[in-house]
Length: 88
Image 1 (cartoon, rainbow, N blue to C red):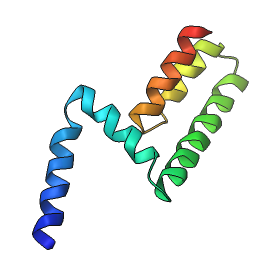
Image 2 (spheres, one colour; image 1 turned 120 degrees about the vertical axis):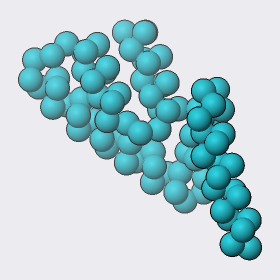
Image 3 (cartoon, rainbow, N blue to C red; image 1 turned 90 degrees about the vertical axis):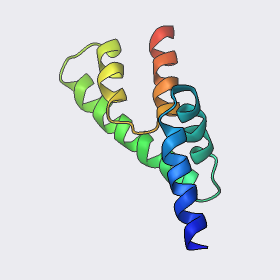
């Protein structure tokens, strides 16, 4: 069982380095039963806090979106922020 856990972890780390697959893995992490909701709330909280701080300092909305994207750790959420930024 221990070897299976280590092999799964190593496989995950190897797959996470591939550009197309890493976004899909992060999407899967967001859809996990309990931890997915927690990850979404943490990243949303970081994004909102950072966005509000930069916006209050007088920076434009597009620059705030780009700066606040750096506070988010999940690549799927970063991709969503990029889509929002393009639509603004």
